Image (cartoon, rainbow, N blue to C red):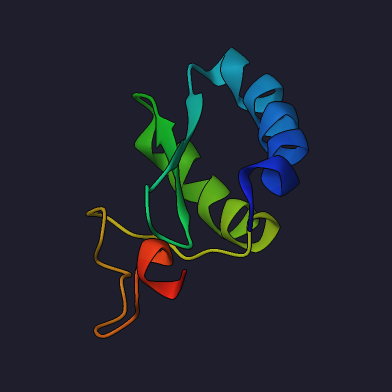
Length: 81
């Protein structure tokens, strides 16, 4: 999903989780079709409870290391030109 499509949800999510000390970030992956959404905080259990909701809302999957969801042979956006 494009950043502009997920921005309203992420803004709402950030307001919801901020009282629990969680920060929400969204970062484009230059040349890739996917963005990276991050949840940063100290309450791991609370953040874990958000994973399914966030993945569904941004049409994504959970990854632990950026790039682990890259598909072998999938062209970068620059190459699709």
